[in-house]
Image (cartoon, rainbow, N blue to C red; front, side, top):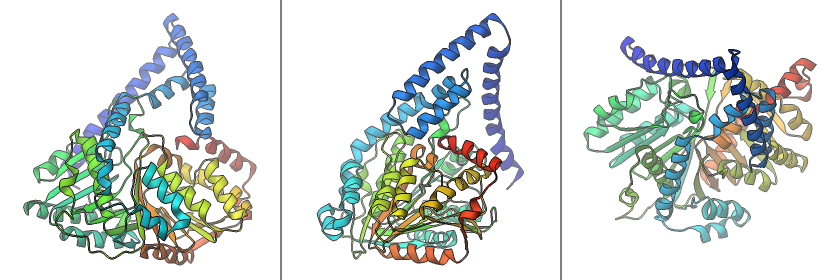
Length: 511
């Protein structure tokens, strides 16, 4: 990384951080300087905190969220209410919410351009009709046939397949990633993108500003535009004391011509393909879908592009089978889905809960974090108590110490209920996969933590009797060979450790 590029990266970002710290210092000074004005301000903020606490109690939110916020306000009666208001009531978030509703209304019917496969899907998978119906009729994401699936793990496998498919692009390439970082992976992709631009192909990139905060310079979109690559930055980081940056675009989507799409946990950075080592071997997963279902990811991308650019897209013009049929043979049912923190509908969580609740023989789960609320804990423990073989693999080498510390606080409860917990001893487990009963699986971007389940834009693919389903299962069983099973005695922490784990668990909704 050149010195000039490095300076560009940090100059603007550090200035923004300085402005936020300055605003915080001014608020603290106004309260603590001992003047009559500061006493009045203190009483005003305390009154705000009381009203906010009453407001929180009346909201239809997760109980864990209510408990955490009310506890914070009691602990910090002056700052607690103000912090909640800064955290929750954000003009820009409301603006995004309105734009999202408008875009979804305009594009809802476009998802069905390949045809409505609902009736055939219900006949093919009668025991999974609730899942199919929920995603199609309520969440708005249809089920597709004529789609081939391929499970790709680790990141090197996805990288090779992605490069191969990018080279085949004839009309457009759409990329949407949480993290883009200069290195071998991104440089290799970028070279192909530049070649495709020279061929007259429509190339677009969306990346999350906080995800790339210290990875890309502020003017990087302009650099890409000079290359002919259209670029949008999701929810730019602003020098305002607010949690507006809390809702992030955590999705990883690559679409080629509307015929092939990728999603999963793998970003465009070298640690994801083990070119560099951050936390040991990086174990990640992705899925490639080819055929009708790839169109769903095309629409998802265009929706986000419309929001970021504040434009109206002609979705139909991107449909790949206007003049030809999709000749991909059926490979089970494939139902891509997206999740938004703006609509109070936790699609990713509900997909996971449906898989858990329908399992009869087993559920195998990979997740980098295991910080969940009581509904997920109850579903997993009930399944295990009912004789379902529930196994969960988490990392042994952590990326965030406090998060991993809190994850381990759940082990005792799960193991006591019969859930088998494993840690990936070879390094960091970043895959987000569920597989159950040799018939259903999901691969996507949603972690088992509060931030991913309730605060981020996410996506995934639910599959039934597809090739990738058994590939997910077989990879999970192979991974267990290099995992350490956690036993009950391994969770016999001392009193002090257990106390701090319980305290951090209380703040889990904010992690």
